[in-house]
Length: 137
Image (tube, rainbow, N blue to C red; front, side, top):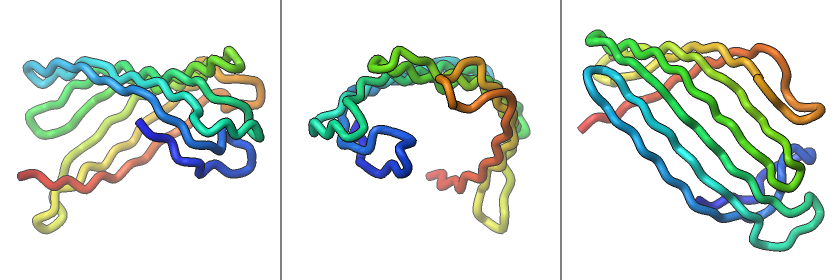
């Protein structure tokens, strides 16, 4: 993975970073179970925002019905090795694939609960809405 320095207002390390990413999953009878993980290190010695060493973990469990409705539970957790802080949002999302004209589109709505976050980070409940254009072959 490559991280570009695009952060503003001190919300994240505003520097170049690089690291490794991996994903493993299994699909069977409408179920998808797996996880994605990566780690990024800062690579340009920009000490303005401190050095970065962060691990991202995203285990997931999803069930898709024959009518293309999916129910997904996951977390998008990050561990900051510099500050020794976890950010752990737990997400539950329901999505549906529909066609608008000939274009398949996936709409999703979900809830997020912050199980852990650093001081000054997000707390409590949140919501998520997503729209994904699909281009099947």
